[in-house]
Length: 291
Image: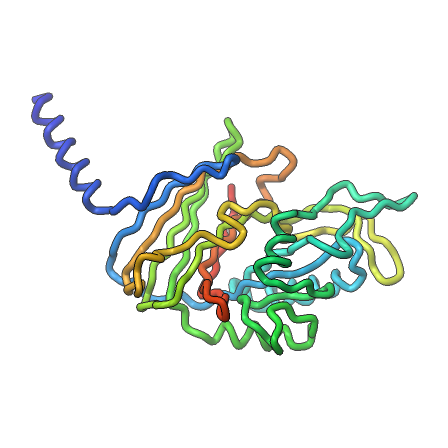
């Protein structure tokens, strides 16, 4: 009986190994572990387009709270249509140090600075926002807040050629998250692409400058915390001239969570974007709570 059970189990394991083709070894990012798998599946129906908004902001940018409010109001009126990530880097992001108002936190990130300066090759005046990394008036970042809603609506109307889904399980005993990201192509795609997976945090109360006063209890949301993939993203199927409908890819991350971050307010953001010299546009984005 035991021999028969072992034989059946071994056969099932072999079938499972044949079902999915492994791509390379696990990747060591020093602060996290990751592994990946690709396979073909029945093509999924495309999910509605969601727009990635990368908001260039700072604690010393007096007009940035108005820009953040504009995006917050859009989210409230159009739930599930946008994913906002606040990028704190460069000018106007130095923590405030006044006699009666001192920042508790430093939101700046060298990786975010590298993303803005090297990948985008732009240093936008704040407040500014990028919408799906599409160029508007020859610039990825737009400072024209009156045009932001129109840019978002244009992107939402487009079909998406890839679905992105996220699941996350937080282990309180060792304060780490097991995050799984899956992408599935819903139609053939020929352009080079990358997968980006980030952590961001909501609900951080600290000091923010306004035009006429300093708010010592301002709530910061969507604060970029950590890149789980390289700043420029992780390449997807570079060996394939065409990513066929039904081509699927999964990556699992085991992520130690910084003790200074409130895990109840942490979110995972994952998106796929084109990686061509003249086209970095985002095909689809998704977000999910870590906990």
